[in-house]
Length: 234
Ligand SMILES: [Zn+2]
Image (cartoon, rainbow, N blue to C red; front, side, top):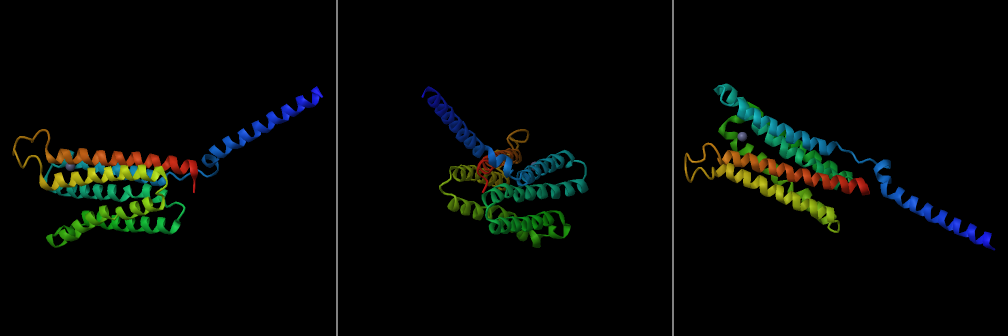
């Protein structure tokens, strides 16, 4: 009798251990069975690094000569276009990785518009005033088109805390970039006190600080996407 009781409790313990092992295995399985691709996150990091490198090179060499200043300014615009275009990759890819149609549609669209904007920034033919409107529309359209996949994600995954959290980061990023563009275009604050902000606090410095802040909030959103998909897959 005593022996039967003992073997029963050992079996019970073994069952318990087996179910625990299964649970832990289920929890970490997606990490090993279906590793989530990292390339969309690296595309964004590459675009952000290219943008910051292009603008620091632009500022370093701008005073060299008229010719170099002309080339550098083009490179600076191309860097901003690359940052905006590559910013779409992590949210679009990780939000719609289980829905290839929308994933390819949004990524294809932003890649096309991004290439067109980079070309419009670099090709001298687009430099002329007639193309000024086209350049402005390309930059503006590229930024605003981000609203479509973000809203789509928010509706499709409204019950997921990760979708809400990443949207908050994306709105913060939009505010940073929007403020950056506003400060850049209106030349605040030096327009109010000319000469007072030549060394520190100039609109162009504020613009660059806001771009770095925007890219950083986007990076934080990218980490949330990675954690979400790593744990759950599709
Ligand atoms: Zn600059």
